[in-house]
Amino acid sequence: MCSLNRSLQKNGISIVIPCHNEGENIPHLAGEIDSIFSPVNFPWEVIWVNDASVDNSKDVVATLKSNHKLVNNVVRRGQSTSIQIGIEESRFPIIGLIDGDGQNHPRDLLNMFLTIIKNPSLDFLQGRRTKREDGFLKRRLPSLVANQFIKLFVGSPFTDLGCGTKVFRKFVATEIPFSGEIHRLYAAHAHLTGFNVVEMDVEHRKRLFGKSSYGYERIFKFVLDIILLRLRHLAVRNSYYFLGFSSLLIMIFGLGMWVTAALLRILDIKDHFDGSLTIGGLLCILLGFSILMITTSIEVFATKVRPVSSKMSQT
Image (tube, rainbow, N blue to C red):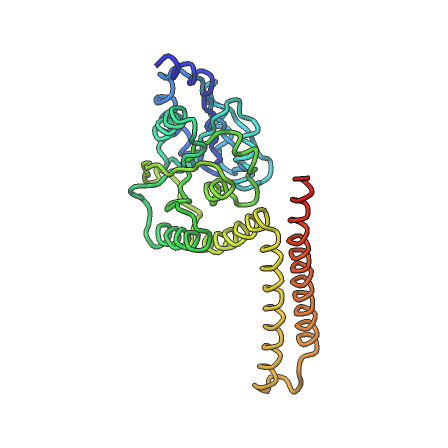
């Protein structure tokens, strides 16, 4: 028990909350955080990152107690960048994330913090909403489709990457900075990078005020992020496979241009083969083939050199 108390005092938690036009939800959420964390015996802070809100969010945060800190984005930076800004302003080695809409319960942050402190091998706890309190068609269905897609495409074991409740060690953000729209897939990034990531059940609630800006348009961004995630980690783990995969994509694109030119001619949409599509397709195929040949040559050369290097090291 004494060692746990020393660990708690040494660590502490910085709760980062990105918010945009959540002026009505902030007082209630801040009050909950105060009531949950005020009795604890370890240091804590809340960093509110106001992402260029046009309501009174900035003014509301400015009236909160001393444990609460305001970081104000003059221009809209997006959720991921706002999170990164909050982490850079944080003082403690454990980071907690929740959304500013009040649908995540801050009590879960306390439970996750205690769990990660008691388990030194844990790097990251990703929330998993046991019962979602939002619309099925607009929120839950897109989330279900997106999570199934990333499970199949990337091999991710997680079932609710869209949950905003997360607790992780600060060095994770040093290795994987928040950028673009990475917040949606951050747990998957951490898992593929080699960090120990575990899902944990958390509570989800209805919005008290305002309305969500998320919808079906988010699923297209999510799919693109998944593809980029896969390519990024493929490139990091094995550049040969990445180059080979890229060359095949370029050649397929070139063949697609040829097929398009042929269809335009066959269907009499054009009375000739489109020169731009034909030449462009040829260049893509040649480029892809060249990259594939260069990649293959490098791999063959490397394979021949390795045994020689090994024998030299033995002598």
